[in-house]
Length: 358
Image (cartoon, rainbow, N blue to C red; front, side, top):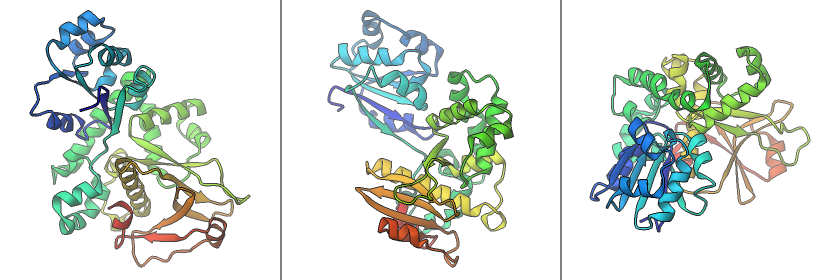
């Protein structure tokens, strides 16, 4: 199954990692150990080979869920893969900062690693069909793509609030040593309100009242917990290009809207363009990740405020994209970008968005 290597599935909480692995194992006799359970954590923290032999027994398949909750789990997983060659190991985790730190070195060459995100647009459309998914487009921008949100129409806000309050902060606060959750909350709200704009760590530190280094480390934790991701600026040829700035987007637009407490319909809000941009970029990220496509993602801007929403580089080829919620909206194309990079700029709107994410 895993050719003697551990199979590791990483992604945000509540996206279906446990459900997926249990589905794959449903016809097999396997041992399930839950990292959220204190007894499991005690058993799997620094056990020796003999203790592991007693725990695993005669099972040939072992599934450790929420493994990032277990101290020094990387060493334990290394012992299992090295000493129990006949045991196929499955591991899930919702926090890259713990699981990657703890498994990268010990499991070098000993693991297959996969990512699972909230439901992708393609998965939704495959499941409910073209017409129904099209009818749901605005709902998905407002409420996002988490499985529980999609499966509980009418209760989306309640499900999202529970998700944000119960799970979003759970790993971050448990592992990072952050003693002021209110600061984390303020930072997330500030990032949510700046959606689609370039992020200044100095400005955020002044706004929230913490130093720049703390802002950086909190943002890093939020990235590794699959709450937000960074989009760097693209710069190659032109002297006036912005080179070091970055934008920050949310893996899920529903989570972003829950953080600011705004589920107003799209035709009555000022940030519709930013939500659409976030939705498309995060869906594109899922598509590239699942398809194992080696394509780099950026935005482009010059000091004269010329901007392209989204840029991709694949095998030296540069492509630009402008995102418009309204298909009739006017778009300004920047000749300097087109000429410098021998590139085309494509407009993505509600009529043709499947070309990018479907």
